[in-house]
View 1 (cartoon, helix red, strand yellow):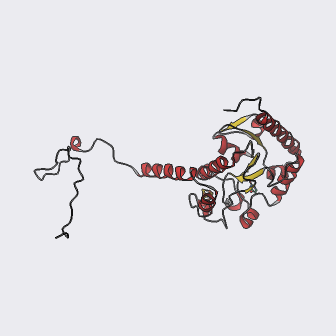
View 2 (spheres, rainbow, N blue to C red):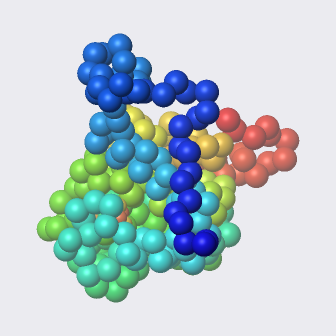
View 3 (cartoon, rainbow, N blue to C red):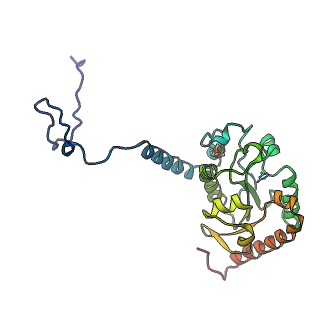
Length: 248
Ligand code: URA
Ligand code: SF4
């Protein structure tokens, strides 16, 4: 007694019993009307649940998830993933492309040559890394040979950046270079055409400028980057002015 298996009826009680005569019906009319799930359906569902999980993470979970992430092939050659650095209640968020060799080794964004120029750009408008400023990248793992990240890689990494931006709630976002701008704006742009335009990312003003690594090779464009940062500062002043309505 008590050892007999318990049979649980799985069919809804009002479903007619099939195959009563022991025949397996194969006519299309007898098959369930919904098409069978394909592998693509499963991966879309898995991606949806991954995005929802990331969207609910706090900083500790986010750091751990990024450190252990294998969602794109950039995980294969990284030494470590680089989440971002700085003030977690910032006014300013700068978003670059992806870690280079030094960032991969040290675990902090923009610590190589391009980073020195970024620090100088920040200083030029009275800012310092870590004080009211947070710095992140579109992809958290170093693209081999510092190649440009592919669209599939920035897409795989975007949920982390989105969650970072939610948690940071910056007042102004500066996209450094094309991959960062395209990832955040979800559209193709050219920096030369997008500079000076007032974009909005989820209610936060977003401006676009040249990537510091590009500026190291194209010194005359530094003047333009300087103008872009002044424009960003104006945009920030505009959103901070209580007379102005929030952006949508
Ligand atoms: N270039 C980037 O885009 N990000 C870094 O962190 C370093 C160099
Ligand atoms: Fe994950 Fe982003 Fe690294 Fe790709 S680049 S493995 S999505 S953390």
